[in-house]
Length: 457
Image (cartoon, rainbow, N blue to C red):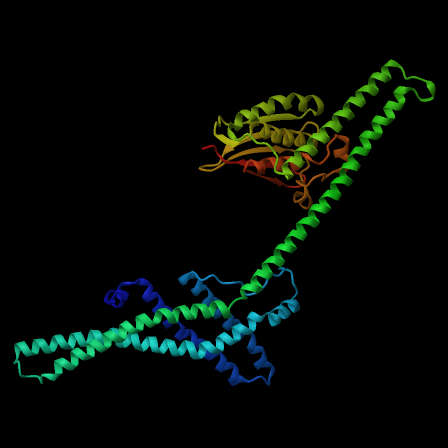
């Protein structure tokens, strides 16, 4: 019993409770001053009504401060002040939300009650603390002084009841201190409970708001998914139309329109066209399967330390002759002796760089330059950069180039056989490997694609 009674003197939580009760005294004064100011000004004139706005902002700021105190000091689980709203709501809608939100009116009631309750408990706690600490310390000092006087001057120089009164006063002050610390606990808990109840939605409202928000999010995701599926069907149908039409026309020609078979030279040329169009269709199917695997989370990755410089050199060796033969484009590779391993899937990283380099070659005019660069960021990840001297990307296109089936130049992309999936696949693979990809480009001055991957180990 005694341990419980006196042990509170060494508990940090007891002084935190006391501080929380004491801090409500100045808060109550602030609330009272704002309410008194509003009442004194009245509501008859327009300036008085306009002053309600800064007064309301001041009250709301202090209310938010009380929530922060309850959460920070006591770990109180507070519900939101209101249901989630869209950020683009009009001012009138926000005003309606504020007026129709029950928490707004509960907050006003809380402020009015705190003016009385906060000041009352705060004053009592202040008085108990002052009497307890100052009174106990004063009585101890007075008792010590009377003892010294009695010893040095004369044992009968002071009336015998004086030390008794001083000692009794010290005991009373110490008892007030103990009582203040003990009572501050339940008072602080009651105030935290009051903050939870009045300065937030009810548990039921919060649960309903969370369920409604989740339902809206699910509906939005479903709408986006449905729209994506429709777009995918339309885009795939559109992409299939041209190669299928070409294949059908050449097959009909090979069969011999009007019973006349084409010469052998034309047959070989038509067969070459059929081979190219078949490869295009096969490429489209492979790219679609890759994206479908990424969407379903089934994209297989063999994550291990990979020499990014070696992968870049491999891509350079494979693509440089092709770039020069078909478009007289010089493909460079710079690794600066970098041998920093990255955590990646070697096959997927090779595919990403192939897509980026192929895209750069396609977009660069004949006689241009494409470069692959591998460089480690100091004490950070490794960057693999593919840059070109092409026409660059307009600002309105930079945000869309990683979208599926998006082309910055429709006619040119179709003539070179692209489907607008290469960059989308590159982004999916890079992000699946835990990296990120970005583009920097100025229209008319080339483009620079940077793949950032984490170092292995």
